[in-house]
Image (cartoon, rainbow, N blue to C red):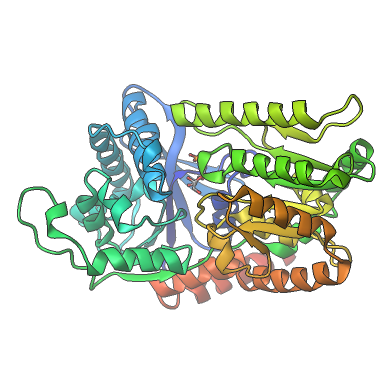
Length: 471
Ligand code: F6P
């Protein structure tokens, strides 16, 4: 039976899994043979070439350390100051220092060198996200013949934004070394196909180059999901109830409008608060009757653009407070801290409206989780950016253009005024979509396409685990 090897920059830690990626893949690997490979989170001046294995929560995890210089160039530099802003169409926020590319490639080569000796010939390798685009090339140059798939968790850029990325030709060549590339949404497949079909030879430097050959690479959309039933259960857990109780005490009868996002410029947080400001400015009746809670754990805060986003958000929240707060009423709370899933599930359950308005987003699992956590008899309303991949899955949300804060303010008003029947009808459609696109099916469909028959191996492994625990 083929093993599954998952490779990503971060690996699951000992505490509760933070990102959607960790939550999703932990489940896949918990049910199948294989291991997870990635960076240990540690920086050391001369990292060992060999990976260290550790068992965390029943998962086999192989990790390597990185040197501080390589990590800076690979993670804060090329991945998050060039690829991230460009893929999110924020070229204005990209910092282009071309030497970072060397560090990015060095780390990918280091990953490949440490991973190669751990591989068996029939292992199926599943590489995740923009940090590791060159990994298949590096593994293949060391002789790997395995099936290798790549999944991009963020949006794929338009052709023009792609051309602005240094070494984009090499990166696209790297993508052609995968057997399967999975994207979040159909729009990403279309953007990729646009590039693949109309590659401009002039973009590959001064040397005459041949067009890239993607004929051996399958490309498809595999929209990631969550586990909506698990969120439904979590929203009734003691920790969720405690959070609901705490919030009830603080809010009384006020309707809660909730945002939960990493503190990232792609999430459109200043625009969101501005839309809320317009709601309060245009509709006096909501003052003292609604409250915006924005949960925004800090992220990548060594990068200047992230610090600036944080400052902008501080300023705009302060402005809204100054404009509308009264001695005994605050229009919003802004929390720069991460919460565990049970507490979040409680907040989702209580929120009358979820404001999920990224300027651009791969999928957005907060939208899925919010839907999963709703009370079927009294569900809240999802206000969703049409530029999140989730908009393709959830057309019954109130879809908005997050750049248009008047439109978002009006969607907020509609959400707050929406009668119960309409809330229920919309939520039922959203929940059906969240169940269809659940995380198990996402992983299985990707793995099945990468290596037909491997999904059944997963079902077998699940049976074995079940029998063992019964015995
Ligand atoms: O979803 C994109 C992503 O980069 C994931 O790969 C990652 O787990 C998450 O965002 C958080 O980002 P970071 O690992 O940079 O903190």
